[in-house]
Amino acid sequence: MDPRHAIEIRGLTKTYGEVHALRGVDLQVARGTLLALLGPNGAGKTTTVRILSTLVTPSSGTAVVEGFDVVREPGRVRELIGLTGQDTSVDGILTGRENLVMMARLFHLDPAAARQRATELLQQFDLDEAADRQVRTYSGGMRRRLDLAVSLITSPAVLYLDEPTTGLDPRSRLAMWEIIKKLLVGGTTILLTTQNLEEADHLADRVVVIDGGRVVADGTAAELKRTVGTERLEFAFSTEDDTQRAQEIVGGIQLDTPAVSVSVDGPAQVRHMLNQLADAGLDVRGLALRQPSLDDVFLALTGQKVGERQ
Image: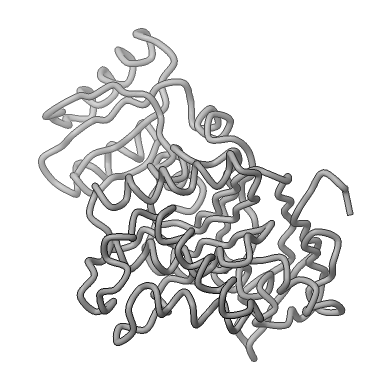
């Protein structure tokens, strides 16, 4: 394993009967960085996280976390990681403080140390005023913050965040982003799965796109955007039939609006495309020129929007 990497996966596969969840995944996460793992539903994101968390055994390949193999040394791996899943795991009947103290005790902290760590985390996550309220009275954002706090009781070197902001309102999502950025500054290595492309663009040092159990792209957000062109031109049409015909003529990606998004390199190419569409008798109802986004990358690579099921 490269000593610069906190996580290293080689040739990872996982099958469930006839279903191939992973088909030879390779990826590395450098220490102290955040890697965002993107993909449509069923692409293999959560399976990857579950293997790295020692919750699932791979069918073949290797996965190493901070130098320890997840299959041969699962106990050592668990000592080094934290996990926040898609669903909150906190107890709604207990208070925020009681949840944290209970989990700290399960991690073998003595009673005094458990109470002290709970107090520290409640302050860190801006939950001290609600510390002694039952968690069932918390907002969704507060519950997610508490769930993340639970995963940090042992100050793990590596943290897995499996869609941590799903269902949060914009204000709560931004608050969670700030917490994640502070963890990175503190040296935590983070593997983030997300359906939110803005989130990946905002937080990730690197982005890996997985589709059908395989890695289909790996790079910085800027590098991946460059693969779909320097600028994107969107042609809007009145009907789905016109949109489909336009795509056949100029290429690009068909959108839902209905519209076609095409990579362009200058005014001459734009004029040429407009002339092609006019010659075909297609009425362009609108034009929009913009910089490429991770949405464009995702559509180009997978033919789907994030969150769409295969």
